[in-house]
Length: 230
Image 1 (tube, rainbow, N blue to C red):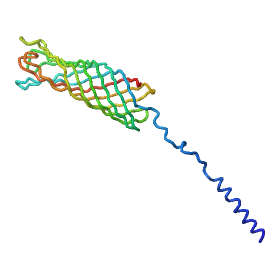
Image 2: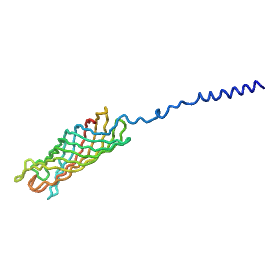
Image 3: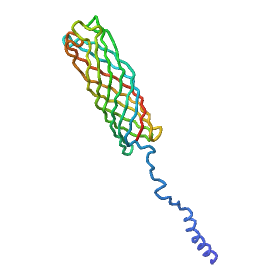
Image 4: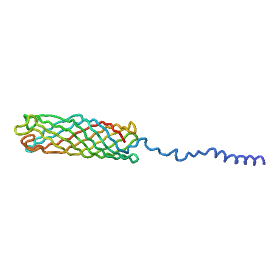
């Protein structure tokens, strides 16, 4: 009996030690704390871009309603400035750009059958809001805002009594999507698509022909750029 009691006491005296050995170590909160994204998009930036524009300028004779559509294409260059603010994975910002569009085109005039109609978008720029989601070094965004441009319409040869050319500033809107990736904390590469409606202008009598003409330009613009983040 004494041997049995001694064995029971020995078992219960060893058990707490074994249980203590099975406890998991306390690593503290630091081992599971969220480290945050490796790249922060908050701040100002500036850069350059190359663009390709494809669009149509519709020239409508206000007396007859006859429309001449001029297809425009061209490559251009420009500069960009902007700022971002990142909250968790959400990124909000504003961006402005200005560049030489290079988009131009010529076609036979529908109503002025002895002339060619041409259209150019020369300087163009935008002022836009941006919003997107950051996936660490990658930013996916949507953008929309104001678009401006210098447009030129021309008839060659000009009709007698007209100068055959009309140049004006156009104001419209733009919207698009894009992606930007940081290759370092300071350098990012960007690809972007924008649809642009440059609005409508009316060329006065004697500019392109014997009647006023409504001029309305729309374009699809693709951009590839590089930005430096301050």
